Image (cartoon, rainbow, N blue to C red; front, side, top):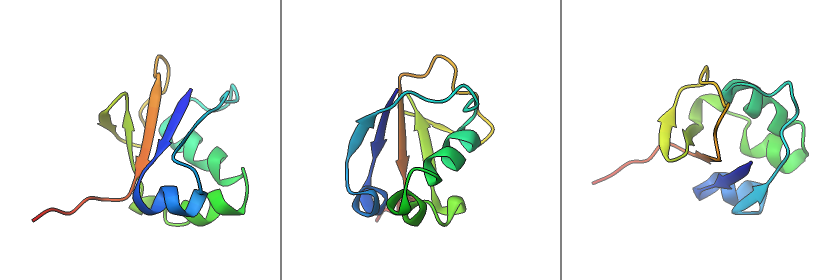
Length: 83
């Protein structure tokens, strides 16, 4: 599974993307976020405010209860503002 990180999520984790093998227990977006927080202090710091994290599965925004089966790419990013 390809994970991509954007903006301050990327800055706090220290990488822009990575390939990971998800554990069998990671089935939904919320499971993924909880698992990522256990991967080290940089992940925990980046995901400390889960309500501030947005997720896209294969470039489509997804809620935290969305199933990950069939996904090829997951992106994590903070809310965007425009002007």
